[in-house]
Length: 237
Image (cartoon, rainbow, N blue to C red):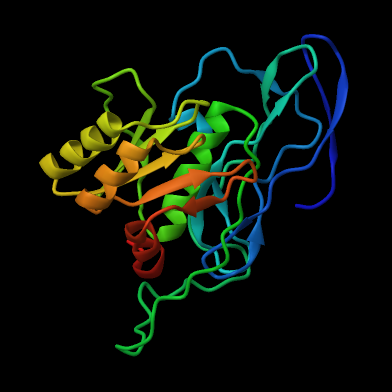
């Protein structure tokens, strides 16, 4: 879907023009959540991880993927969910089912489309940017991890344990060690993301433990800050 649609805040009645974000399908086709034109947006009063994602079908290949739930912040301070048409099961209309597996030559790397970031305006955006980047690297079924401390936000997936520090505080060595220990207990790869970077001790400790460190810039694109992060980008999940 392209172009902007009118959205009226049900609280203050202000009208906005909203343009859905566009994301890259694995086949390379740009897709965006099919927002319901003319439907009233819903004020966000309680946030859960499942509410942050919607299932979207690629009209080109029929693939189903999960992308961030369309949201809009009104000038009155109300955060709004933009309603989305539910994705139907089965192949997309006019498309034959895709084969479950297309073998590649043994030496050919798996194709990876360009990463499309989401602009970071809030701490929640920073966590979503990290989750999207991990999905782009190849990790599936990313969820909030159980937090044993009050610092940052944990993310987990099969074979992965990540920590995101979405505030203006640099991540310290203790947080780096905690995510390493959590990953060690789960036989997973530890990864760290921070909006404000890392202390010198944290970087030294991460290098010693081979933990990939990324800094989130405001465009939503994680930048590698050590060699393990460069290696993770090269190999993927």
